Image 1: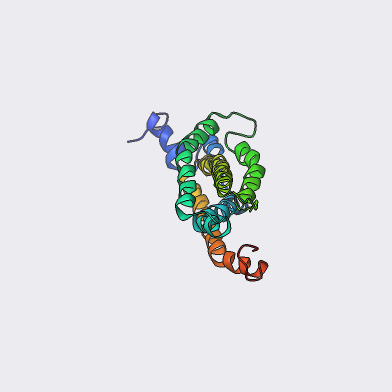
Image 2: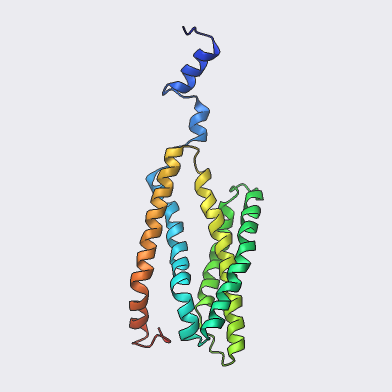
Length: 207
């Protein structure tokens, strides 16, 4: 039998029923659909870059830069090895960041412009004749791009987990985010080559 004033009664009154204490709603805010869609746009942008790297970067190096397949593959390997150290560093630094804007949002904002610049440089043809220098350019630009990707996307991914403590809201945020990333994948895979052909008038090097 439950009696008023007992710890059990307090628990039932404050946690078991729908009338939860005020701090519950402070720690578990309701996230609007507008905010969820806005957050998912970050993954749309990241996947426009990531899918381009995964699908077309090697082809770009061999067909546009004129690098041998082994050299082009080595460029990607070097970047992946560097990424194994950069990803944990990005996570550690973002977790230790303390600003009035929070831990993760500043990193997303601070790295947005460099991320865009290094993305363009990674797919820019400097028209260098020396293939060794071309390989160096490809390696440096690709490592810098992957570095900015890590410092932008790692905090961005962590941001979704601190927007609310409500598990259902977190699930909804993640679901909408993945819808956005899937749309970005379809855009890159379906439109990149037609756009290259159109702007290059049939010449992939110009497109």
